[in-house]
Length: 80
Image 1 (cartoon, rainbow, N blue to C red):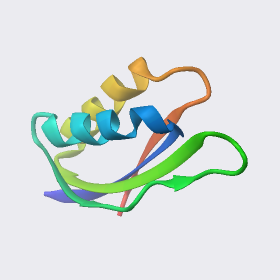
Image 2 (tube, helix red, strand yellow):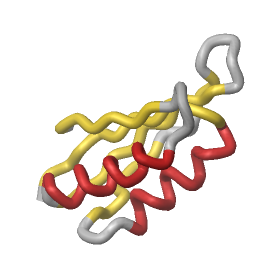
Image 3 (cartoon, helix red, strand yellow):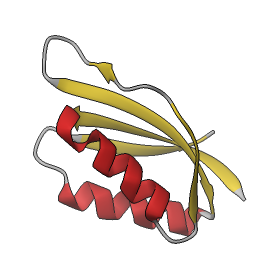
């Protein structure tokens, strides 16, 4: 299994849902999560988590979350 770093930036109200969706995704294990931090002078937060899983499983989970994000929010995946 490979670890991936997932970065979410968006409304604070979505933070828990994003982390939960990653943790509940098939073939993906949430292994670490940093505390969310406020970004700039907006109400947006940044959340960085580390997940473990096969590339396809993690990529599918990130794509499913990205499809539901509002304008201005983002989620990215990087190998760690």
